[in-house]
Image (cartoon, rainbow, N blue to C red; front, side):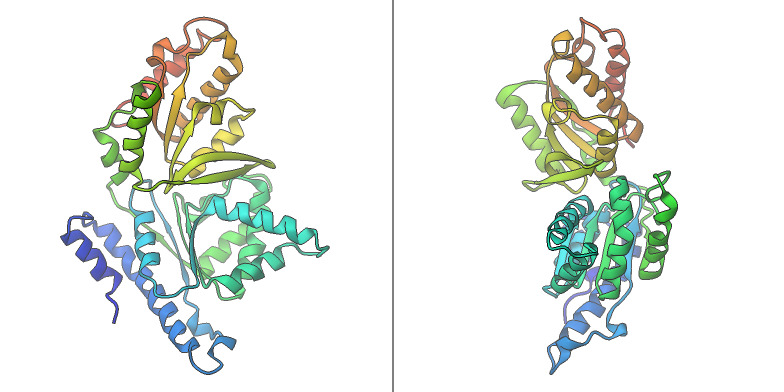
Length: 359
């Protein structure tokens, strides 16, 4: 018999891979219960005609695990998915999943169907019995209008959902346009999923960054090497692109993993992005590794304005910033229109350099 998740967790603690956390331990039984149900149903399906029926008792409630950043939600979900003994499972970032849904719906519309959501939901349910989402957030009205009907179909098909989020269900799409149309989805979550707060007092991501410089006046190979090191310490992976859908356009983060994004200055400030795009970024990203901030002046005034808006948005959302730049904050923008106003941005950059920022 396979080890319980609690036993695997204890072994990782004993081996020094993890630090024991009472709040994480409390969350493990809910994940283990889902694992046991799915694996038991998987065994029964191997019998004669087993694949034709899925009994209600074989479909456990999912789990909506929410809490502050860096508390270990993604780590626990990965532990669960990696040790779940079924093949029909998928772990994906929520924004990436919704981007795939939009693409699928566009393809379905080309066939002339009246309801583009139904074939997309059916296709997903044919492939997976478990969907594990990282960072469920709803910031786009198009997603808000789709997600309720999509998940209603997935739940009806017996798909189990496990997700992490930085906020409780009642705060999803908070203050969003036509939010009353979104409220039935919140009720679906409460019926179909166990809502569990991971109330750990420790921010482990902050611990990783606590002794790390966050602002580097570097360029070229040295800058890239410094960011490579920090990226590996934070993620340990190569990272995959993440596409955020905002008001019908795509915002591409070239590298992303578990709430950490790595982008170049011109990825975010060199194209026509604005406050809504940066707000969507803060919904998905808790640590931003931003490379190659140049000197700013009247010659790149538009890029400078976008950079000011980006920093303001990161600051208000308490997103941790790690960056390379051509100069110290006070020397980034010393002449041209907007130089005086940039003093506030320089001050915020200085504050964000502090070891306790975002704690």
